[in-house]
Length: 229
Image (cartoon, rainbow, N blue to C red):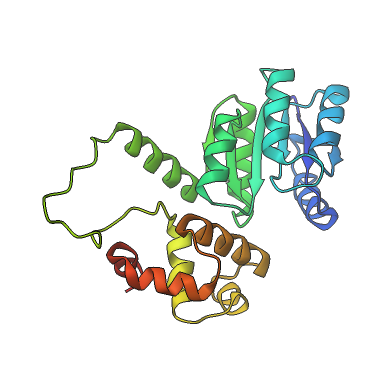
């Protein structure tokens, strides 16, 4: 049986070590090498020609999405599986647009991760549950009918779609309740870094610069108020 030759790309040594330990237990997977950033990944891909590249997103020098784009241009048959803590719509959609065949969250179970590797190796696409939801919602928006026009006399307080993901909505609710990033991280069993990344994206989408502005905006819009109630 041919082994899946794999290149592991992540800027955290501990993360790479943990993933490699898992994959080394699999008889059909051979981790050829590791890379700590996108530029190194491109160099090692050219040298090693792996079957699958497991790619993180946020890395120095060149992030995983940029590296994926360059890899696909370099080799249209390259198979990239994104492994990231980010379930934000922007990251997911951009990774898919740049050619990634799969996208799995780092909190996925070992079985799902291994299934994703084997699926991508076979040339098929694999997206974990939360990621699939984002892609389906994007598809429905693209296929949807034009937004209805406002009736005369309609107030600007009517509902607005801020395109928050399910996880962002959950975190927004906790922020409005006054919880700190540390408390939210403990409640959701996530890292503080992950929660802070979500908070940044929430504030970016809602166009606010502080938690106080965030709460005020929630109270000012019916759609946001309904989300957190």
